[in-house]
Image (cartoon, rainbow, N blue to C red):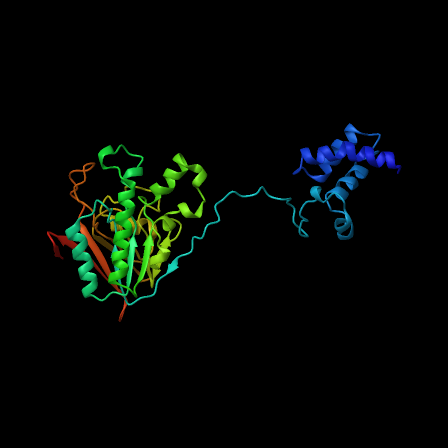
Amino acid sequence: MTAAMVRNREKAGLPILEQFPTAANKVLARKLHKDYPDLWLDVEKARFWVRLKRGAAGEKQRQTSTAKQYQQPLRKPGDPFGKLPESLAELEDTSAYPLECEKCLVLADVHLPFHDEEATRVALEYGKRAEVDAIVLLGDLMDCYSISRWVTDPRMRNLAKELDAARQFLEMLREAWPDAKIIYKAGNHEERWESYLYCRAPDLVGVPDFEMDKVLRLADMNIVWLDRMRHIKLGRLNMVHGHEFGVSAYSPVNAARGLFMRAKAISMCGHFHQSSQHSETTMEDHNIACWSVGTLGDLHPRYRRYNTRWNNGFALVNMTGGFRVQNMRIIKGEVY
């Protein structure tokens, strides 16, 4: 083969390799032979040239090739498929966060700064008397009212005040329980921050300093942040905020039964602002119990004046001497 023919093959063939990077070798060979029969006298010669360029003509040739940009991953023996399209699925950490403790105080849906001060204080005092060694903030600690996609009162929109209230609350928790494990699980209201950045400030998405845990300075307080992709595992108990299943209203009987129907595991959630419990036993005598925890937020916000199913509440999970959940209601400052 003359040097001129080599140059002509490169000039004619390389653009086709670039244009059809996922096409099979034999398909490209047929096209080369059809379009340039004077350069490739038959399909087999064209196929050999394609294999050379794609690094499929032996390991030695693959290592010494000067056209490595056209090489493709080698197929495994017996693999009938070529390279699959690259997946764009988010490969985030979805593993459960393991929590070990003896007594855990669970606070859900505080909705700072629209919290119920009396109910919040009652829950914290109960946890202090119980000598808990872990606190789980089960989502919606912040309301994020200022960046809500819903129509909101402009007189009440103050993001700086909301962030300050959250930091103040978290610092107060750490001061009251200096040695306790504190886990902050994101709820749908915390996700308003991410949605706001997506829509209003996309250039800041992915910048570490603008992620919620950094804005709240959680690392300085030794507080663990869990985003929407992860849940908490305390013994056999799975803890989620409640919105992760993608259905906003799934409690025709009560929230705990709705959680049972979707989780199919011993679980606890917030999100629905009501204290409820549901359990069933399988035919193999495995008992599955689920709980929903009440809110520590205002029971009568302007957007929903009457909430006959909402109640203030919190939960205490005792792992000492066995797994036991106390799902407490708060009514007029009293714990039931």
